[in-house]
Amino acid sequence: MKNHSRIFIILIFFLSGLSCPLPAQAPAMYAIDTTASEPYNFLDTLLEGKRVVALGEISHGDGSTFQEKTSLIKYLHDKLGFRVILFESSFVQMELMNRNHFITDSLTGNLFSIWKNVNETQALFRFMKAGKMILSGFDCQYYRNRYHIEDSVCSIYASKIEALKPASDFRETLRVLCEHYGTSATLIPKKDQKECLMILNALILEQTDTLQEHDSFWNQVLVSMYGYARASWEKDIMKANYIRDQYMADNLLWLLNHSYAGEKVIVWAATEHICTNQVMLYKQKQKEGSKDFYKTGDFLRESLHEKLFTISFIYDHGSTLWAGDSYHADRAGNTLEKSLAEKYSKAFVVTKYLQPCVVNGTETNQLYGSKYADWKLVCDGFYFISNMQVSTPMKK
Image 1 (cartoon, helix red, strand yellow):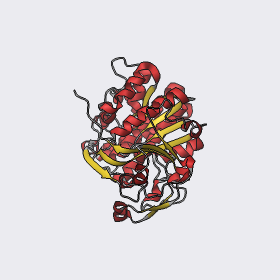
Image 2 (tube, rainbow, N blue to C red; image 1 turned 180 degrees about the horizontal axis):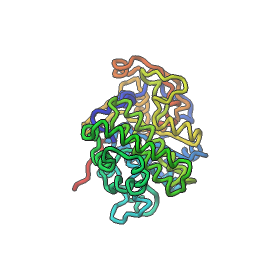
Image 3 (spheres, rainbow, N blue to C red; image 1 turned 135 degrees about the vertical axis):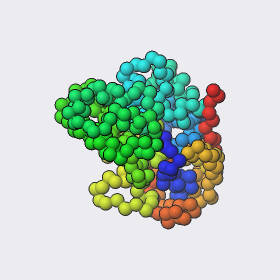
Image 4 (tube, rainbow, N blue to C red; image 1 turned 90 degrees about the vertical axis):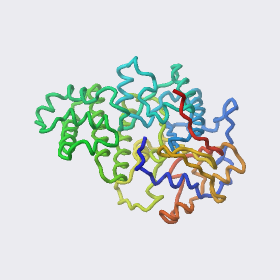
């Protein structure tokens, strides 16, 4: 979930189209017929030994992508044993709902509305509500302050907070942070922001060596809040985005190692979060060994290695939404999408068979110049949809 000012560079490349030739090898491409009994059986071999399948979307308004994801997720569950879906939604709120069994909250009560309140995801949620799958989230951001997290934190860590002798009202700072997405930096004085970060960091460091399993969850709550505060109060928008990705990855890895240890997991998020090595696509220089430009996908790949499989959804023409605004796109004749559209309405491309190429879309050249891209380093597969339809809001 993003606000208007957070325009991500990876979006430019996927909205402009992918400049690389159609692969000739038969194993590289598979036609998809979702009316068939087993439309994704080619994935059985590709996903052998994989624990995490990450499903991207170019924009959070890609309605056709949501529908294709739903079809794919049902197959992953029924045929390959994936039982858990982790959404790009609030880690703290989704996990509190699961751990405390809040019966007044629906399954999707804490999902961001871009997925919760559109028609194209409802088939998935009906499938999940039938008891088929577990839903949680990994974002450090919040969707309203439903459970008054500040009260729980200040109660659990009361003595430790008191020992730090805060000069400001720590509870109030947390409340404003959680309740005012995107605007808390203007509502909380700088000195209070600084003290809040100091207290959160001190609480995290103090108990790291003596954690029990229950404490581990609340320690991760602190870590997530610390990341959310850092990202919310960072002036540099791009740096704030990288901070958010770092803590989304931290939450995700914690979930894989604790709440859902041993489970096969599906990740649902924006393409720009789950793809790897994006630094090679634009003019950013990363020092050797530095993680300054790591996205969530980079952290996951570093930890999971070959147990991760990332799928990016792409399309040839149609409409979607970006930051609430309608966007219409038709690919140029020299793009992978246009080549696929000549043969398929839906297809899957294994990126390890794609030849490295120069990213030379017009929009890309104007902003960043021609850049070399090896797409197998960005994701493992492209799920192609010829015609993209925008997601549609449910009637109230």
